[in-house]
Image 1: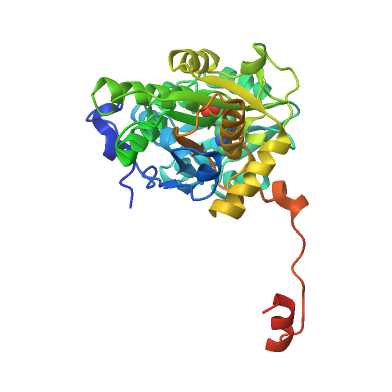
Image 2: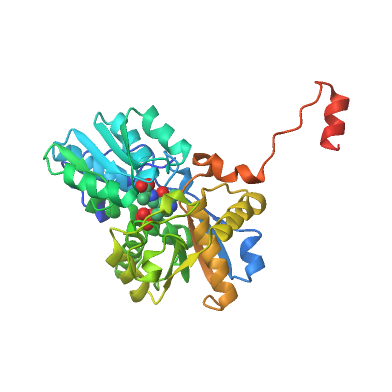
Length: 349
Ligand code: F0G
């Protein structure tokens, strides 16, 4: 069982003796070796960092726990965020557990059903705006000027501090940094946080080298690839449907300092990678998460990643959050009479 990221990494986090030691058991997620995809690509190894196993089903919990602990320490009573879904689910859960009111602004009609359900079931007040995530983030930035209100998007520096613990865990689990780390990029906080985590660990001598960072955007929402804001981003991977990432510079620095790259993958490639992860690895992730695998595959084909490379893909969120993304592939189960003979016939046993 995870002690939570604050207890596990307190000395490397911005917490002091007065910071409450909160936890919902976040962090400590498995980094499992791929059995099919990695060998097929000719990689030296491929590990999947299963961040969907965090308490609310995404990596957001790592940063949320630190942001909420510091918000409580500062006397805040309300958490506010804009979200494509996962941040709001996480804020709502930590808000519920630690006695804070949570208010959430989401883009209307663009949040996966499971994520909206999570925010509501944890008691958050949810308002949908007629616009995208970028508009929602602009609005909450305006609302969060009151001292009793804590903005818990990744523009809150404590969020990225908490999220960098995932890079620590990758190194702790594998014994060193991988050669490359592939990660989906939306608002660009997580790639920024991982890069910070790897650099800090490297500075402490805990890993012998730094990984090349491979950032994956969806083709219809790829401002960092195009080098300009995308006004009307679109992708089936709603979690990363973002046209003006807040941590733009952090992502560019991670890319350039690590001699990595940020590239786009098509929705069809994302959905194909999501399906392969489910069918071949037993890992059911949401579409945005599969962008990391789709990009790694693309990089092996293009030669940007050489055979024999040791790679990690960050699988950022659980597939259960977004069942509709799979609907095109699935059919209703056959229904038969409740008899062993009929069931055996239907199952082909
Ligand atoms: N994967 C998932 C499952 C996400 O929910 C997000 C971001 C990302 C990847 C991208 O991470 O923004 O740090 O580059 N979700 C945010 C949200 C925007 O509101 O839940 P990023």
